[in-house]
Length: 380
Length: 247
Picture 1 (cartoon, rainbow over the protein chains, first blue to last red):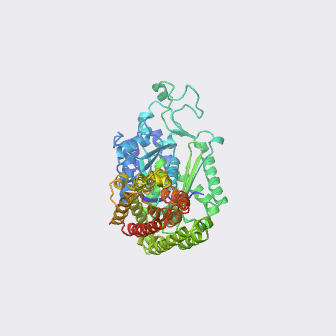
Picture 2 (cartoon, chains in turn red, purple; picture 1 turned 30 degrees about the vertical axis):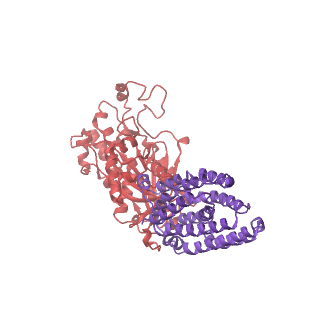
Picture 3 (cartoon, each protein chain N blue to C red; picture 1 turned 90 degrees about the horizontal axis):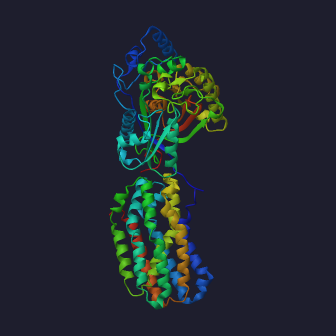
């Protein structure tokens, strides 16, 4: 009992602030131009393979935009791409690691800036996989027939946590350097509807699956607490702000020793999708995978190829090297570019894969390219 | 998906039920004749509906989301008048027609929030509530609504049972099939077809009530003629309303 509608991705947008910053332009914005830092940075950049990224910082490292502004610009681009207005939306789901303010919710700020009419909001927090959590929530409401149109945006302004200001006087180990020379800013957005685009192909959202393994893994990526275990009275909200800063609590950190385990867990999640039949490897045409660094690209690619022997680089897409790692925005920024550059043809399927190191979350989404209704054999 | 082939069998089902149904057939010869005569009106309506463009596109599978939205828009403008004309009729039944007055009051109460379902469906597929509420009746709806109100103004407007036969019959026998077919062709959720789905249940109850009245012995030959005539007019005007979308 109960018939549901189908959710289609019908508009795609992205916003990358400022000009692309090459590797030799990073220090001017984020600092860290001493010899030791310089050496570490070079090594990490070699590992992650990122050649260009964007920062919402000027050439002196001063912030130029808010995270909510990045989100709104990506949303406007997606709405323009679809040819609709913010007033046509009934729901807005926003994913970000950290909004600009502590309160209110990020989505409230984005809606306030975007405008449009009354709508349902969702602020999905977390890290990279919050993007697909937001997508899933919006798609569920579309499927229920509660809303005809929704927009989803992932946006990040990580650079403000990576500036020298946050590192002065802090003992920064690999756990902070790794992210400092990897993360950057940007936003990606999609429009979701209960009908396909009337005159262009759309991406039908077949399913979203989001699994957390936090029950069996420690914290991998963190900010706001002194170690991997938070304790009452000792988080950044409990101690003095100066003490929190001195303890390096405002620095984003990642336990890099856990990353191999993360990659393995992600591949097991993919294997499970194949085992339970959610992914039919004979009919999987494209993979758009978010990974933080090229070091994991080959690992993931080889892992997938074990189950999809025909997977070649033509069907594998990532724009990490040129757009940087933008956290929750990454998957939408990659999807937008893959879509816009015509990689997908009607009838083909696409798997989105987003591992999140935070505390081991894995999100996948399966899409099918559908032709506009008047080319599906049903005359208008 | 729900079976949508009921369209073609509905008329024969009604005719067969009318003829074979023991209480209705056995009550008196007048009621039996009335049932047969109403079944004929129904068959004629079914034939006409087959040629209504939007319903033909629905059957063909070429109907668009815009078609569904326009249909809801047009229906809403007339459905808001449904309860008022029934109430007006109720107030014109004298004490000798107490049962009909009672039934009309009950019926008006049950229907007076129906248009809200259309409004929810309309918004759920992306329509603007303000535009919907600011809309006007199409020429068919104008004629239908005008006729109903005028008829309801008569003393003891018994003929309106014929109007009920048509309108409730469409709800009970056709609406759910339309809903299922719209869902099938356009991929709509249940939440987007409340109005048409709901009427299958609600109007089946109403048509049951209607049968009880028609077999109660209070319908004389003159009233039967009135009922058939009213059914003919309403059948034609209802189809006109569906033909004249947005005009």
